[in-house]
Image (cartoon, rainbow, N blue to C red; front, side):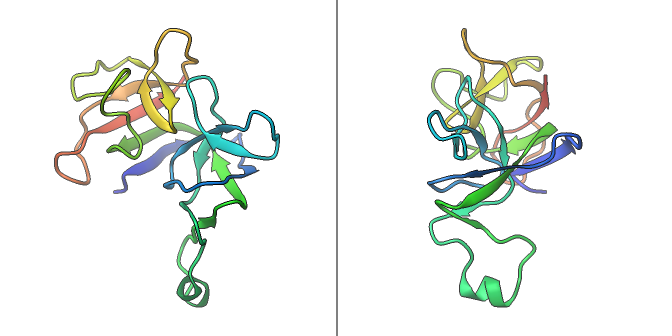
Length: 155
């Protein structure tokens, strides 16, 4: 089990390719860049394109990873990354869920809560936000004890 899993992919959507400057975990929600149509940024409450297919690091794959191929190399910051759309995902922990502040998701957040993104993380949508997902399960068994794990279904 991973801390971010696409449990149902949107097979008709295909992948989206955009450049991204920064670092991000695999599964970080990304949105369109406001001024550069070939770039992306972390998703906001009104801007979502898809999830990062792989981790994005400062240096990209190491020499060892290039010599002894892994299943998935990290992307290098500043270069093209692939984004995918999912009908349903499971996410766990603070890398993927806003756990404090306005819009935080807790173990008590009601199933059926409308979700959006802030800083590339799921959060409970606020007035004026676009509702991208719906909380379909909460407080699932986490990979790491003590973490919050949710299931979100695309609206």
